[in-house]
Amino acid sequence: MMFLRLREEIARNLRNSGVRAVSPYKVGIGWIDLAIPRKRIGIDILDGSYESCAERLSSHPFRDAIIIDSIEEFCEEFGIPAPELNDEELEAPSAYVKAIEDALAYLYITGEVYEKEIDYRPLNSTLPDLKRFGYAVSYSKPKLNPQMFVCLTHDGHTAAKKVVLRRVELFEKRLRKLSTPENYIIALGMSAGLKVFKTADLENYDLKSLLSFMRKLSEERFAVDEALHPKTALCRFLVNTALNGKAVKLAQTLSKLGLAFKVKKYSPFGHYLGEEYRIAREAVEALMKFSFAEIPRDYLREFMALTYPLSHSDIYPILSYSGDFLRKAEESGVCRLEGSKITLSEKFVDYAKVRLAMLIEKITEDLP
Image (cartoon, rainbow, N blue to C red; front, top):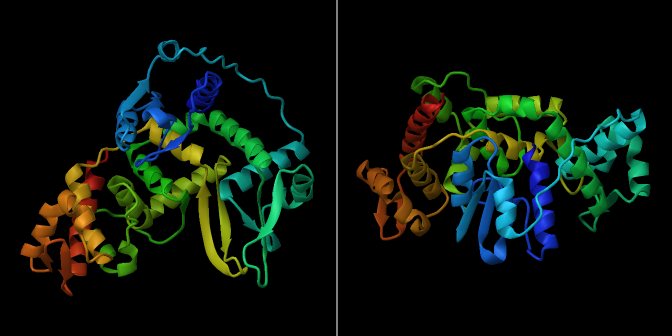
C-alpha cells in the first residue's frame, strides 16, 4: 500500500475531525508524512527504513514523534476512521488525455517554463486547453520588458499532483529497487531545491583521485546554505561535487519514469542560463523513505568546520557544534580563533580541500 495515498487519506480524516494536519511536512532532513503543528506532533508512516523515519522526525523539534506501523491502532488512538484505499482500475488514456497529463506533470515538477521556448511537445500542444480549463496561466516577473512564463493554477496543481502520485505508485517497485544507501544520500542532497545539473565527473573515489578532484574546485563551490541541516548540507555538497555524475544518472533514470525533467533555465528577462534536471518531490521522498545511509556526527561536525568559515567570519552559530574541529584547524596553523571570530590564512582553502577529500573517501567507503 503506497504511503503517499495513505497519508493523504489520514490527513483528510484528521482534518474532518477538526485537527489541523499538514502533509507532507518539511523538516531538517527531507520531509515527514504528517505534522500537527499546534501540538508539535510529527508523524511518519513506516514503509521501508525505520532509521530513516526516526532520523527525519528527530531533525525537527517535535514534542511528540510517532512512527506508524499499525494504521488501525493509530486511527483508533486519534479517533478517526481507518483509510479505505481501493486499487484503481485505470483504463489506458486516449492520446489527448495522456498529453494533458504529461503537460500537467511537467509543469508540476518544473515549477514554471519560459513560454517563448517550450520544447516539451505535450505542453506545446495542450497549453491553450490547459489555460482554457483554468489549469495553467501566463505571468511575467519584471515590469520592464516583460517576458512570459507559464505555471499551474491552484486547480492545475491539484490535478497535476494526482498524475504524479499515480506515477509514483505505478513505478513503486522500480523506486524501491533504486533505493540504495548511495541514492539516499543523493536524494537528500536533491531535497534542497529538487534540482541537479552537470558540474563534475568523478569515477574513482580513492584518496588520490579525490585530492586531485578537490584541488580543481573553485572556492565558490564550497558555499553552504547555513539554513540547511548539516546532513542535508553535506549531501547537497556531495551532489554538486563528488557524487554529481551519479546524481545526474539518477535524475536521468527518474526522467524515464516521468518523475524528473531536463529543462532550460531562463532569467526573468528571458536570458538563457543553462540546463538542469528538476525532480518530483514525491520521488525524492520515496527514495529517502525506502532506504537509509548513516553519516557519523563527527563527519557532519568537521564538514561544517571546513565550509562555514569560508563565508562567515563570525562562527558563533557552529562553535558549540564544530568547536573541536575548528580548534584542530587552528592547531594546524590555517586559522586563528578569537572568541567567536575566525581569521583564515591563505592555506585554509587548501587545508579544507584535503580534509574534505579525506571525509568523502570515508563516506563512500562506508557505503555498502
